[in-house]
Image: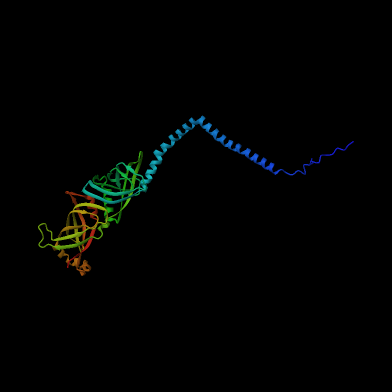
Length: 358
C-alpha cells in the first residue's frame, strides 16, 4: 500500500503560531467607531426632533403660560419697578439753587421767585408735570407743616436743566414757621430750604408718580456780617424833618436770597445811650454789596447830657478817631403795612460799625 504524503505546498499552522493580522484589526476598529457616530448624531437629532414635536403639540399651553407671566410681570414693572427707578433717579439728582427772591411783602403773603438747575444722573429725557411745592422748616419729624406753597412749572429735564419762576404769589400759611425761616436766613451762615411736592414723570409713554423732596443748604446773611458806614456827615441846622446826619450804610448780603424789606427804621445807640433813629427807604437786599442811604435824627442834647458816659464807653474808638455806632432794627413797613415777620427778626439784629469823626 502506497504511503499518502501531504502536499508540500500546504502549510500547517496552529492557533498558537498564527501571526496577528494588523490590517484587519485596524479595519475592525474603524468600522466599529464609524458605526457609533451615526448612532450619536441620530440620538441628538432625535432629542431635538422629539422636543420640536412636543412644542408643536403643546404650543398653546406655552403661549397661555407666557401671557399669564406677562400679565403678572408687566403690571409689576409699570406700577412698582419703573416708579421706583424714576424716584431713585430723582433722589440722586443734584438740585442747585442760584437765586431766591422775596418781594412785594404783605402781612399774609409774598411774591416768590426762584432760579435753580437740576442735573439728572441719566442720559434720558424726563418730562415732569407742574409740581405743587410745599416749603417747610425741616425739624426732623415726619410731620410737614408748610409755611407757603408755590407751583414749579412743567419742564423737560435732560442733562443740566434750568428750573425757574418769577414773582409767583405765595400765601403765608403759617406766619410763625415763616418767621422762623426768615430768622434762619438772616442770622445763619448756612440755612436750609426744604421743599417737597408730588408730580408725574414721563419717559416716552411710561409714566410714574414721584415725589420731589430736597433739603437744600444755602448761604445765609450771617447777621449782615461786614456792616459798615462808609460815609456820613452832620447836617446843621437840621432839615425840616429833623434829619441832622446823612449816612451811607453798607449792608452786605452773602446769600442767594433777595429780600424786599420796604421802609425801615433803626434805633441808633452810641456809648450805650439810645440817641436817635435812622430811616431807610425802599430797601432791597440783593446778593452782594448794598449801599443804602440813611437819614438820621440824633438827639444832640441827650448826647451832651450823657457825654461823660459816651466818652468813657467810646475811649478805645475815639483814640482811632472814630465813634462806634450800633443800629438795631425797629420797624419794617411796605405799602403802609407793618411786616411783622421781618420786624420781629430785625429787632433781634444789632449792627455795629465805626464812624470816622476826623
